[in-house]
Image (tube, rainbow, N blue to C red):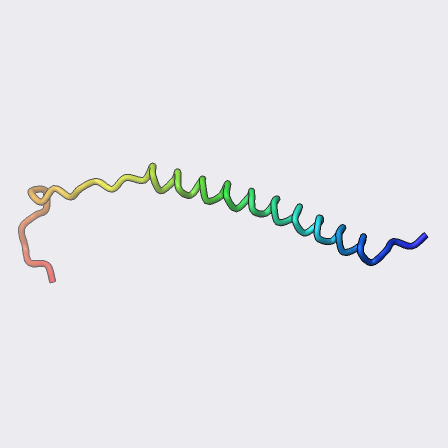
Length: 57
Protein backbone atom coordinates (compact mmCIF):
# COMPACT_ATOMS: atom_id res chain seq x y z
CA UNK A 1 0.00 0.00 0.00
CA UNK A 2 1.65 3.15 -1.20
CA UNK A 3 0.56 6.69 -0.46
CA UNK A 4 0.43 8.75 -3.61
CA UNK A 5 2.64 11.77 -4.07
CA UNK A 6 -0.43 14.02 -4.23
CA UNK A 7 -1.62 12.88 -0.78
CA UNK A 8 1.83 13.42 0.73
CA UNK A 9 1.92 16.97 -0.63
CA UNK A 10 -1.58 17.67 0.73
CA UNK A 11 -0.65 16.30 4.17
CA UNK A 12 2.49 18.45 4.25
CA UNK A 13 0.53 21.55 3.24
CA UNK A 14 -2.09 20.89 5.93
CA UNK A 15 0.63 20.33 8.54
CA UNK A 16 2.33 23.59 7.50
CA UNK A 17 -0.96 25.50 7.76
CA UNK A 18 -1.63 24.02 11.20
CA UNK A 19 1.82 25.02 12.47
CA UNK A 20 1.50 28.48 10.92
CA UNK A 21 -1.85 29.05 12.63
CA UNK A 22 -0.45 27.94 16.01
CA UNK A 23 2.59 30.22 15.76
CA UNK A 24 0.44 33.05 14.36
CA UNK A 25 -1.94 32.81 17.31
CA UNK A 26 0.96 32.87 19.78
CA UNK A 27 2.46 35.89 18.00
CA UNK A 28 -0.83 37.82 18.07
CA UNK A 29 -1.20 37.02 21.78
CA UNK A 30 2.29 38.35 22.54
CA UNK A 31 1.64 41.51 20.53
CA UNK A 32 -1.57 42.04 22.51
CA UNK A 33 0.29 41.66 25.80
CA UNK A 34 2.92 44.14 24.62
CA UNK A 35 0.29 46.69 23.60
CA UNK A 36 -1.43 46.37 27.00
CA UNK A 37 1.89 46.86 28.79
CA UNK A 38 2.68 49.96 26.72
CA UNK A 39 -0.79 51.37 27.35
CA UNK A 40 -0.42 50.85 31.12
CA UNK A 41 2.96 52.59 31.17
CA UNK A 42 2.50 56.26 32.02
CA UNK A 43 5.11 58.96 32.01
CA UNK A 44 4.54 61.79 34.43
CA UNK A 45 5.15 65.33 33.29
CA UNK A 46 8.13 67.08 34.80
CA UNK A 47 7.24 70.00 37.06
CA UNK A 48 9.78 72.69 36.16
CA UNK A 49 9.42 74.38 39.57
CA UNK A 50 10.72 71.23 41.30
CA UNK A 51 14.05 71.33 39.43
CA UNK A 52 16.77 73.22 41.36
CA UNK A 53 18.30 76.28 39.70
CA UNK A 54 21.67 75.87 38.09
CA UNK A 55 23.52 75.52 34.83
CA UNK A 56 23.14 72.21 33.04
CA UNK A 57 25.41 71.46 30.14
